[in-house]
Every structure is written in C-alpha cells, then in structure tokens.
Length: 416
Image (cartoon, rainbow, N blue to C red; front, top):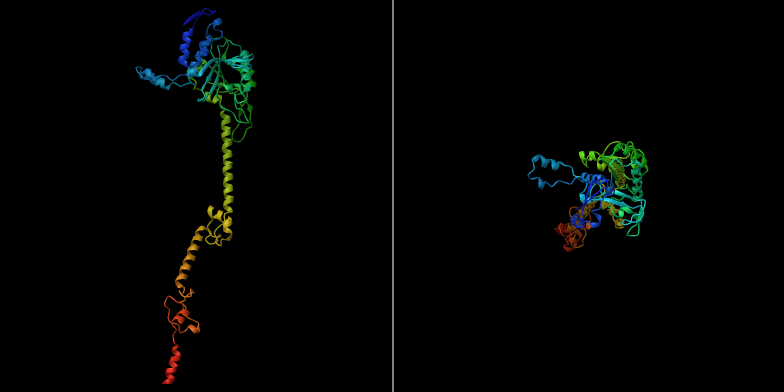
C-alpha cells in the first residue's frame, strides 16, 4: 500500500503495482481497469468515491456466507438468511465507465459522459443499470446536463462487426432487444442521493425530472375497455429512477423504494424499470385476440360440420376419412359412396351372405338356382325325381328320367 494526502488534508491509500497485480489476479480483471483513483479525490478527498462504493455495496447486498456463522447465535443466522439479496455481485460492477458520444471506447471524444457505476447482470431482472451518485452538492442543472449526455450516448449508432449499424452500448453490454417495429426502452439510469451537502434530494430530483422530461417521458396510448386510463409507451426513452441511500439501507434493493420519473408512488426495482400498465394492457389485448381466434375457430368448425354428409341408410354423419374418400376420384364409381363406413361393412356382409346362400342353393350341374322350396309349375318337370339337395328339377329329370305313371296306369287298365 502507498499513502498520500489530498488538498483537504485527508490521508489517501492506494495499491502498489505489485498489489494491483495481485488484486487483478484475484478479481480476474486486467490491471488497467482497477486501482485508479476516483475523480476529485486529490482535491476534496474521497467522499464521492466512498459514496459510490457504499451504493454499490448496498445495491449488491451479497448473500452472507452461513458457514462462517456456525458459532453465531441462532437469531443471527436466521437474520442472515432473511436478508434480501441485491443485484449481482461486487464483480458485476464497473466504476467511472466512459460513455463516448464521439470517438471510441478507448479514446472517448468530447461531449460524452462518465458513469459513476455500471451494473452488468445479463441473467437478472435488471441486466444493465447505470448509476449516478450525488452527495447533494451538485446543482440540478448539472445533473440534467449529464443525463442529456447519457441520452446522446445511448442513441449513438456505430457499425458492428457484421457491418450493420447498431447502438454503441449494445456492442459492449447485453440487454433485451425490442421488436422490429419498436426499439424498446433504453437501459435505466438510477440517481442515488447521499445527504452530505446542503441540497434537498427531493427538490433536486423534481428539478432534474422536470428539466429532462424529453428523455424519459413516454407517449400516452389510448384507453380501451380492458385498461382504464391507458398506459404510456417508453420506447427509446430512458427509465429515470431516484432513491436515497437511507431508504436503500433500510429496505434493501428489493423493497418498494424506487421512484420513477412520471410516477407518483415508489415501486420495486422490477416494476419501476418495467411498465406494468402496458404489460397488463398487452395481456388483455392478447387474451382478447386469443378469444376472438377461438370463437372464429368454433364458427369455422361449425360451418364445416354443417357441410358434413350423412349416411342415407342410418343417418350417421360421415367420419373425416369417409368424407375425404367420398370426395376423391376413386369414389366416383362407388355405388355405396352415399353410405357410412359401418353401413358399407354391413352391406358387404349381406352381399357375401347372399352369395354364399346362392352358392349353397345352386345346382351343381347347371349352376342355376334349385328352388327346392318352391313347387314345380312346369308340366314337363311334373314327374321329375324328388329333390336331392344337389340338382335342380330339370337336371334331375335328365339324369334320372321317370316314366309317366299315369300312362302306365292307363295301359294297365286297358290290358285288364
């Protein structure tokens, strides 16, 4: 460690080159990104830098290591478990990040800003958060001017590696994309006030919000029957949030302590950064569209069923497979296309039974029907042999001719 003094007489400590190398190896960061003195430390000491560090720690709220509390009282362990967890970890933060309105990341030009702290947690509800810390010494107009520089940087577009123009901040940080029609809101900016100076945080906040309305105010959408009062659309706008470090200490980053410009009541970080009224309106709109689609589908199905043909024999509606077959080219010559599948099966069974019965009743010699159950009306076959279950009367007459018994009887009577 090396020591020095500020103009205010405060003693300052910084890491030696060897200490920076050890810290870089421990944190997994390049040496050039860590170990620098915060702005203004040499002039006024380190109150602003300390406030930035306290803000980062309060927003992060790392989960306590319960293994180190094994010997602690039971109440301390339960309190540690109930402690709300914040956003990311200390490693998720970067301080004094340049936001170039001109130039590059490495060599920023004039007109840009420098963020006090930037939180990057792509997997969290707040994937990207810019933080500005004020010790109640800065004039509201200076804060508003810096927010204008934020807006200029966030709307700057550069050519990406694929040759297409892209927002410059998206080339470095991940953030949910908008749609092809709407670009979506810009990353949020959080103003954290520490009551060290003479200015009132509430008054400063009101002045900053009034003077930067162009950058955060949304466009009001129309009201409808599903969302009374309508909602605001914040596409291409900066969600501007305000909080005091005292409220953040007391309730933690998960409490309802975040004030958003344009809203009356404090909200949680998720609701303050998001747009609950818009989400509700869109959910109602999507539900209405789904209901309309469902009703339309029901009407189409009813109209389709009304056209479904019915069997001419039993009256049952055709199945989809049967209906498709009757409209095909193969069914043009089918005499049973007006019947359902069940009736077709029964008709085929009846035809087969009749055919089998006819085969059983046919003469094995001439293949005509024997008609054994009917009396012989042909005079020439009147004296045919009795039915044998095999041949018809004509074939029995030919195979086994019988003499005319009446003629023989007449001869016998004449001879006698």
